[in-house]
Every structure is written in C-alpha cells, then in structure tokens.
Image (cartoon, rainbow, N blue to C red; front, side, top):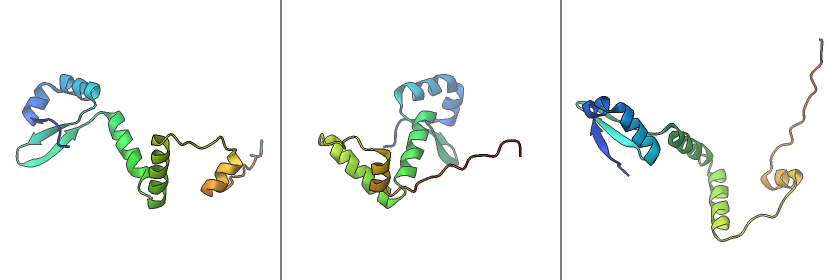
Length: 105
C-alpha cells in the first residue's frame, strides 16, 4: 500500500497540517526527497501497532497461536474462562516466584 506522496518541500511548508491529517486519517504519507531515499510520515500510535505486531509474530509458534485465535474469534468460538494455573499449563508459561525483599538490610 503505497499511500499518498508529497515532496519534501511541500511537506516542510505544510508540516503541521500534514501531521494532523496523518493522525486523523491513520494513513501514512510518503515524502519524496530528490536524490535521497524517501521517508514515511506515520502516526506514532500506528507505528507502535506495527512494531507490536512484528514483535508478536516474530516467533513462528506465537504467530500460529495468534492466527488460530483469530480464526476462532471470527468463527464465534471462544475459550471458556480459565484459571491462571490452567492458562500456564495451556501455554507452558513458567511459574514466577516472588522473592520478598529484606527491609533495612
């Protein structure tokens, strides 16, 4: 999805309104720079979402789990309420033990 483009000069002249438009439309804008690599202007919340998605799907196992959960949700299937212990067992999460801090030491 290429998105709208503008020149560096046009972007510089209308930066505030361009930023407002990017935030309100949730669309990115490609800024073309003569003789240099283009850059993208994107809302910070959109960038955070993209980075989080990339992080969550970086592990093939986690990506498959997420895809399966999405298919289940779209089909109207959902997990019944599970206890923390059941969730740990299901997803093989390690049990974290809290070690009390010694006060005044």
